[in-house]
Image 1: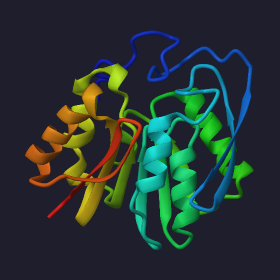
Image 2: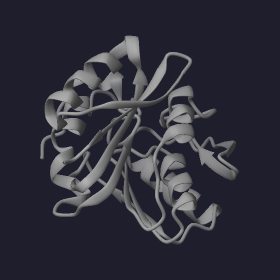
Image 3: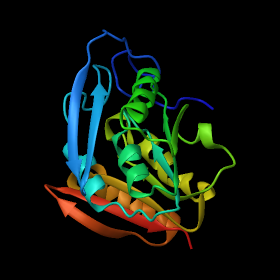
Length: 207
């Protein structure tokens, strides 16, 4: 699969191989009654602190125990880790094209004693070909271009079980409106399940 519009520069968080400076940051997150400690680094999205969009997704994402969950473009892994804690009898797969993100996400699974999850390296859905999930979670990389974000939506149905949910977060006036329109086109439905600080969590269900 071609990396459409993704590997643009060595320092972008959506590039395959950002330069690892060796510097590390510690991030602590307390959300939905869950405490998570994370190691991050330059070259990872929102490396120094939890970004607002991800925080809003974490607050409002729909998770049920026993689900198979995909954290698409996982970065250092916070969404997948919180999902794994919310669904202890479920299973979470985290994916990212960024080698450093994959390395750190694996370290963060161990750091948080997560045993019902794994991290795979690859472009978008490439690492989970042929698999299906009850939920796909993503804070899409708007700065990588709408074409990449549209691929997240367009390809999602083939990776969702019937009744499965695609859950995205974005700033409504900075790309989110277009993503919502695309979700409506692809799925025939899209609900806003949470909104905060200009960010909205959009959910489409595979009928």
